[in-house]
Length: 509
Image 1: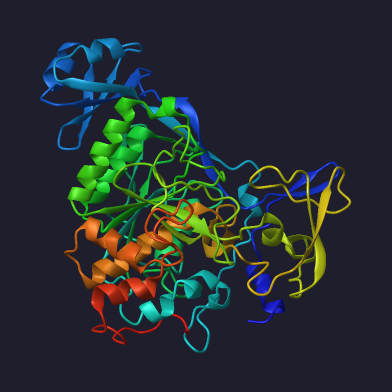
Image 2: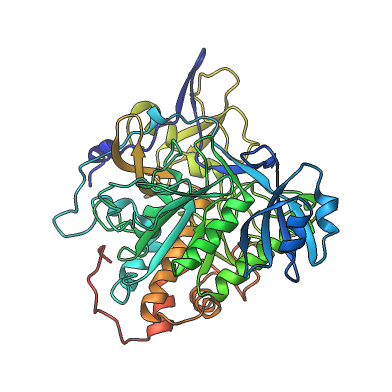
């Protein structure tokens, strides 16, 4: 694909008009702790862990049990505000936690900014139209791995903002089994929908299992199921995610992906009751045979000290993923820490933010791709935030840093994936970066392993992925865990040479 041809698939322009010019929002999406969640009735919702049949006593105390999890040892309870002490006094109750809300953060995006690109088709050699830009798939040696496994016969559940149906690369979406958990309630929908204006869940799905029209996912022949946990207002609750996890196990998903990386949370949010409930549900899901993959978060935070944690990747029983970049190093935004990171996977960007953004303004403001080795500059309002706001050189207060553009794939060193433009109803492709887009690479790799060994238990699946990873010594590297995933190494460890060459190649080696 020539440089000029790339213009019809231009990176989303996160441009916001201001009195003095244009602000460019950098890639990366996260979520924040938004407080205590309440039930539709306005009453408090509690998460209660028990060691016996405590349900009759809870109801006798004036509370309603609206759901059971983890074989009945975790109860979803609704009742009066301030009823925690009463619940803790019920026989058989071990811990009581209030349900909490997580808010999706996206301060610069509105739906009209997405530049979708419908109508792409595979090239004459059979490779996806945007294969040239999928540097991350070559990095993990996916084309060679696809000679052995493509995820056929497996199921990937995406717990996220939803997957928009109808994208030409997501014909493997199982709409019948897709649903939503909102406000503690299971919602059957006529069809799934992505409620985020930046197509977060749809992008995650494409990275895991796009079918090779515009792009190829890690497991293009796997089936996708959308489990939406975010409301249209961008709110998810701890209860909704727990319900979604158990539903993924109920429908026999091989893997469930949680690209819901929150900002690092303080120890007090990880209260004993909430932690115990989350771990019981996760362990039950894993016992049922479903692997859990989770994003490590985008705050460049050290999660090894001070008790800070991530809501999902720090959860026992999950595979937490950090993000590596086009330089095959930990990205400048990725969290790290041995208690949260199990493996690494490509998430977009580079280790140095200046190198990551060198050439971006030419692309945004001039509509061109800078030549490799071109002397230019990166201008920001402030370099300190994890994701700085880029501005033109003449913008008031601009801080400019000289740089030389890198070799390919820059400036498109984000991860390209599937998007939906809600303002036009069109489907297309877009570039983004974050640990949200590293985790589905791992989820797709789980599907490749499960195709080869359908009965392999989750612990062994994770072990195979960790053994196939590269770039780390041992399995406790704070940045990479067991290392950056390698699809070829992993499938060869599982299948040896038996399946090599038996399946078509989705992209040129």
